[in-house]
Structures are given as C-alpha cells and as structure tokens.
Length: 244
Image 1 (spheres, rainbow, N blue to C red):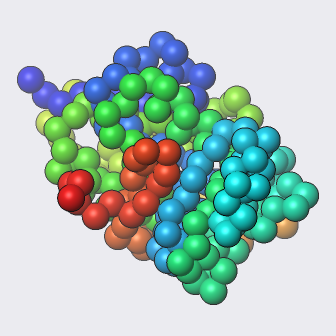
Image 2: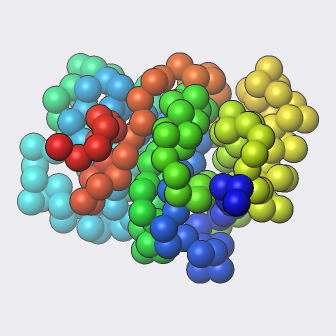
C-alpha cells in the first residue's frame, strides 16, 4: 500500500486528523521554523519550544543561562533576549547556548502535533527542504505536514513549503486533498516564484511593512541548510541519527 501524506493547513485542524503514529513536519516559514533551523545551524545547543509566554518566562527564570527568544505580534516581548528574526540568531549570540522560544504560531503547531500523538516530530522550512525530504524518505511512517498559519488563518508561505516538500518526495505516495492542493500551488509557481509569492502574501506584506523584509528574503532561500531539527523530550536538537 502506498505511503500516505497529509497536510494540516492550520494547527486547529489537528483535532480532525489522525496524527497518532505519523512523522509530523512542523512548518512556519515566517518565521519560527526558519529561525529554529538557523539557530541550530549557528551552534545553538537546543531550542525549547513553549506555546505560552508565561511558561517561557517561568522556564527562563529556572534556567537563566538560556536565551529567551520569540515574538508576539511579530515583535520580541519586553525583556526577551531575541525576537523571531532568523538574522538575530548568529553564531556569536547563540553558539553553545540553549534557547527558550515562544511564538504566536509555530510553537502552537508543534504542541498540536505532540498532543496528537505523532511518533516523530521534525521542523521544516524552505531553507532545509531537501534535508526534510531525505529524512522523510529514510523513515516509514505516514507523513503529516503541519502548517502553522498566521493567527488562526491560512498562510500561503506554509502551504508552498508543504508543496515543495511533497514535490521532493516524488511519486508513489497516496496524497490527501490538501496535500494535492499544496503540491499544485508549488508546481504553479515553482522554486523561482517562491520569493515573489511570499513577499506578496498577507503575512509577507505585513512583515515587510513593519521592517522585517530581510527576514522574508532569508526564509525563501531554498535548500541552503542540510540539518533537520528533531523534537524529543521537550526540546529540539539537530538530528544525529537514532538514539545512542
């Protein structure tokens, strides 16, 4: 029987999707998943994702050596060390450090996949698209791509990323209606049209308007990272193979 791939276009859809036993890929192109990939690529020891800002602050109080990063309404909350811009997560700032992160959409998507019973949870972005494809091809579970959306609404950039991953997986998969739709979106514009479409999206226009246009340029670079962030035991680290 062909392997199944499905897409949740919003975290809220997870209550209607059978997530138990799946390989879930969390997608928040603008910007949490892109930022997590960047932080780990620049040497962050781990990322601890928390949905609630109060829990993030409490965890930071317990572990003040960690950096506190994230956003509400796209900007860093008061007292945070970092926002949600991938450009902030440089080697100088995050190298060797743990990061506690809370965002409006991305960490909520991860929590939904975890509560839904996904067997494996990884973080996907356009920047590490091929690495995610390779990881999925090396595993046998049904694939569930979980798009973060933006404040409870559909986001074009996340659907395009899901489509790019599905395209990379090739034929031989049984695709849900949403998976077919995301694939069609990606194939309509192709890799050359990603940046233009994402800059023109509602979320992209908003970020550019408030001064984060360079983040969109960063997030729309395809296949520039070879690492896969994996969520285990409440934290995200670089996948290094099976547990030792």
